[in-house]
View 1 (cartoon, rainbow, N blue to C red):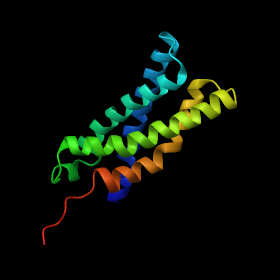
View 2 (view 1 turned 60 degrees about the vertical axis):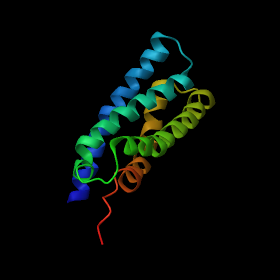
View 3 (view 1 turned 45 degrees about the vertical axis):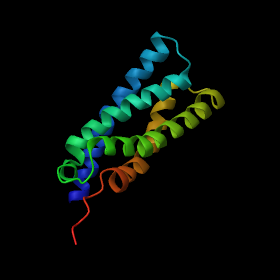
View 4 (view 1 turned 135 degrees about the vertical axis):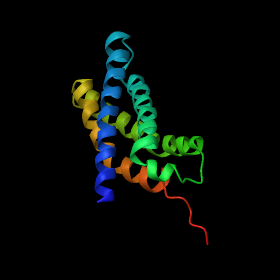
Length: 136
């Protein structure tokens, strides 16, 4: 049951992160006319930072309360895992879908976001918000 609750929280945070990412992408691309690839990278990073804050305080709060690492250490690990996965996969799929298949950048971005979800969950669960080491 604990895993199901955590998975539900992860997805709730993810949905909020989608709103952040799409909003930033629309602003950067639609208003400021930034090319869709750098706009995507910046939008992803904003969503990554947003999601980290929620995961830290809600999704994995039971682990962060007893963690043997600092918030900054977890943020660095989150950016190195989830951030890297998300940016690389989003940029690859945006190039493929927008340039290769001529799909509009917003639906293409939604598909790219969805493709990262499961890998990001397990990266967060096992590498970023791992349980504190038990004393021997």
